Image (cartoon, rainbow, N blue to C red; front, side, top):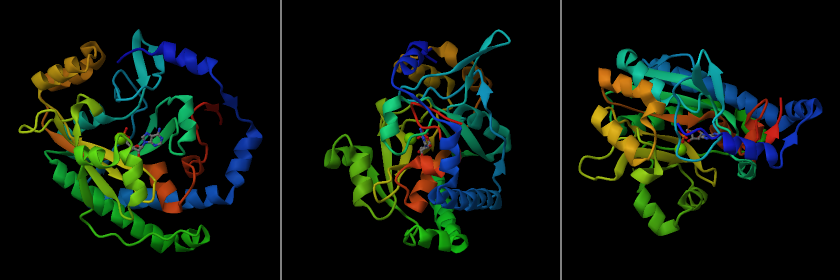
Length: 325
Ligand code: AMP
Ligand code: MG
């Protein structure tokens, strides 16, 4: 992983705010926050129960490790020097999922991620620098099975929230339609042709149901995503977009597990293989293929409650550029 201590310094020099304990109390007294946290509690229970009923095992999150997701966009990487090693705070458990699934076969993690997003992301309404993914992986599943599972657990979650928290949704003035399985699919290429670079915004705003973006090009994703054999340069990846302008719900795909291809892809990205030595060692030992996805829990809550900002979906929101409890 690139060491980005220079970027961290920039964050320190740039405009940042320190929130007071009064801000923390005011936030926790906000009726919308209380409603959103009630809905999120139901959402978390529903996701867990949907996955457990399909024989997925919940494993505990990893918070600190010599290996984490390189990500495809710049965030500052906090490093802890520990026992003579560099350890990183988890940006995602992608590699741990791929390794754990070899023996556990079907897993999920309610995984806290730390991504020190650049301060201007505070304007997006959907970025926190600490958030949770419902992170799912299954051994020898293809993308199709993952997409099918994602649709099922999302539809079940919406239905459970409507059942258990119908009064909360009404007080928020929120109505969510009953979706059918088989969400619309658009390829990344077609989406870009029709809406331009910012297609995520355009498609999400124009839709009343969730929409899949499939077949994401290599440059837009990380080295661990699997390429189609018959479509070089195109990945067996997918994103799901929430409707009504709420942007991305989840990202996922099939994973690359072949050592030679992993090494080629790392070098194509211009990354240092030493940063991924633990994953390379796992691939050298032998990995079987897997597929999965990660759903942003706070963004799901934001969508369910129709919130203007994802910060209302967190008890102690970490808004980029702000230091808070
Ligand atoms: P990714 O694999 O990077 O797409 O992350 C998985 C999911 O986590 C995304 O689809 C979002 O729903 C959510 N997510 C990613 N970054 C953030 C962030 N900075 N704040 C809140 N949620 C996020
Ligand atoms: Mg994504």
